Length: 266
Image (tube, rainbow, N blue to C red; front, side, top):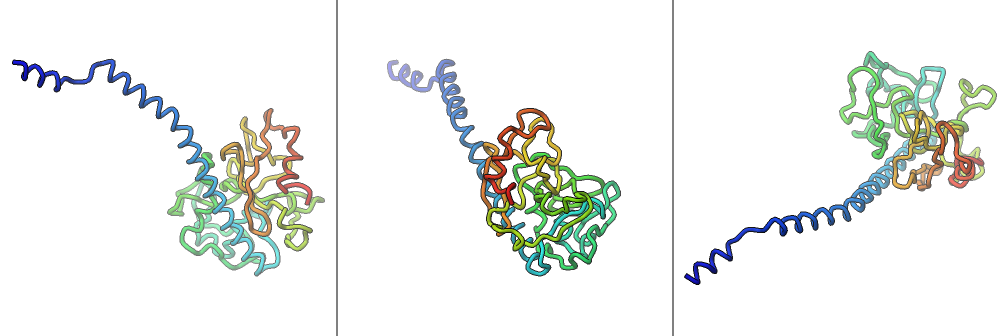
């Protein structure tokens, strides 16, 4: 009789209070660990973004060695991106299409470059910031298997420094072919960074993150708003970008931050 009682006591299940205690402990551990996991995920994306920018820098360096100037983008003549220029005469073959139709289209005139630097498999992937959630594809079926269409100027998540590429007398149409040797200290000249809303360029007057409504501004999707920046000598550094306190307004310390980064003061 006594043995039977002992066996039944040993087989009893958990009480409700015990289950609640265990669930509470698990919930507490998750609450403690989740921020760390999110932070680690954000840091991993920042590292991958830096690697992407270094690869972009290598493509641009190869282009500059062959042509004597860095790739740029155009507003008036086909609205090609600096990525289009890196494809030379094979943009349509590489999947560049006319928006809303999907028809192959060569945007950049061959007089600027006829060599395709992006022939290797997966080359398109490096032009997509892994932390940017605003990725879209404009018009037509996407011909690129990796899903990162790079056509026109509204489909990139990296933007080049716009102002130094254009003639100040006619900002939107006169393009200067930029040679790194033209500048005193290329290693401190930030050439490219993450872009919000898929523009291929970032103007000085939009060189800040606008959490209210960004359009062609700097991206601000990395932890603590610290973006990787690609410099003209092909190295990458991370800095906190200016963050708007009011819609469409550069923060008061914006210019100071941009000079520290190397975006201003060339």
